[in-house]
Length: 157
Image (cartoon, rainbow, N blue to C red):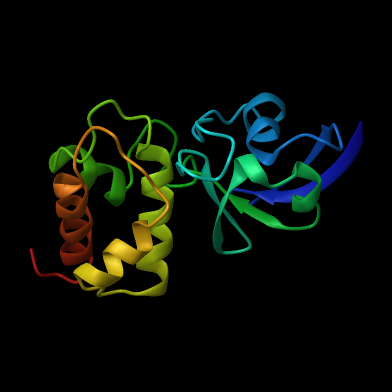
C-alpha cells in the first residue's frame, strides 16, 4: 500500500491505495464514494467518469496513484448532501435516465461541459457527452436535460 494525497470534491484527503488500484476502485472502496460506477473497465462506457484537474477521465483506466497531488471531482460534488444540483434536477425532470447506470458519468460530463461552454449548441453537447454510453434512453431525453439546465442557467426558462 502507498499513501496518496489529493483534493477530493474540494477537500484534502489522504488514501492508502494499492499501487495497481484503479481510481474508480479507490474512490468506491477507500473513499466510500460510490457514485462512479464500474462498467466496462476499458474506458468505453463512461459510467466511471470523474474530473481529474478539471478534465473528464474514465477512472477505471487511471491508477489511483496518478491522482496523488491532484484534484478529483466526482458526481457527489454537486449539491449539499441529500440534495440534487441543477444538472441532476434537469435529468430527473426531463427523464434523462432509465436504469440510471450511466447517469453519474453523464452528470459529471455535463457539469464539465457547462463549466467550459456556457451556451453549447447541440453539436457541442453531443461532443461533450461522447464516450458516455447509454443503452436505455436513445439520448433524446439526455439531450433535453442538458438543454434544460443550459437554458435555466442562462435565464431562458
